[in-house]
Image (cartoon, rainbow, N blue to C red; front, side):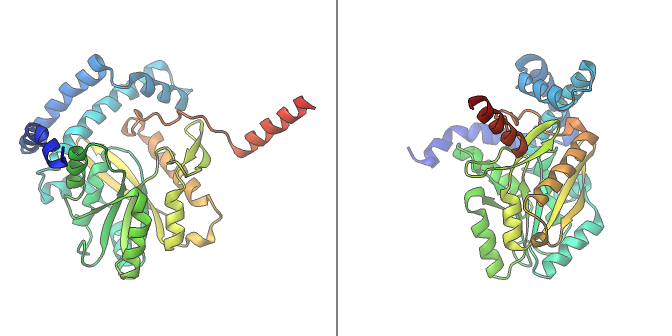
Length: 319
C-alpha cells in the first residue's frame, strides 16, 4: 500500500485538527482543561515515570510539593498540545505577541549571521518548544534568502504524523533537518555561503553511537548528548543557550545566554557541561515546565571515576 493511500484514513483527523486550529486559544484552553482531567485523573498518562523522575530529582521536596509540580506539569502538557495544534492557523501577529525574544539577543544573532558565522543553539523540551521557530518573525534577515533558520528533528515512523509535524515546524519559514544528515546539510549551507542558526534539542538520551558526556544533572549522573557540541566545534559556530520562560498561559519568552564564541578554545565536554548547568537552572526555576514524561534515566550511568573505583574494587576482590 502506498504512503498516499495509507494516509487517506487520517483525513478525518486532519480535518478535525484544522477546525480546532481556527478556534481562539482562549476557547482551546477550555479543551485543554478537559484534557488535563483525562490525562491526570483517568488515563494517568505515564504517571509512574513522571513521579519517579520528580522524586529522584528533588529528594528534598515533600510529597505535597511533588504532587503540585506534577499537577502543573499535566496542565502545561495539555496546553502544549492545543498550542501546537494552533500553529496550523495562528497569525504572525498573534505569534509575535505570544512568543517573544530579547531584542538585544536578536541583534546579536543577526550580527553573527551577517558575518557569515553559523550559530548553534542548545535548546530543550521546555514548554512550548514548538513555538521557538517563530524567531524568524523577529530577525531582520529573510529565511532562505539572507540566512537559513534550522532545527534538528527525528523523523516519526508514522508518515502522516511526520508530515504534519514538519508542516507545523516550518510554519514561519524554518527548515527541519533530519538528525542523521543534519551535519552534512549544515556543511552544505556553509560551503554555499549561507549562514545558519540551528536549534538542537539536546536534553534527550544520546543516540546509539553517541557515548554521551556524563554530568551531574538533577541529582543524577546523566549522559548528555555530545553531537551538538561536536557540530558546533566542526562548524566553528557561535554557541548559545535558549532559556525558555513560561510567563503566562500561552505566553513565552526566550532569553539567550552565550555559551562560547570560540568553541575550539574550550576543552572537550566543556560546552556540554555549560549547557547542562544552564538547563538545570531553567528547570529549577520552573520545574513544571520541563517534559518529565520522558524516561530519561532508564539506563543508569556512572561517572568515569566511579567506574574506575568499581573496576579496582572488583580486581581487588579477585586477587
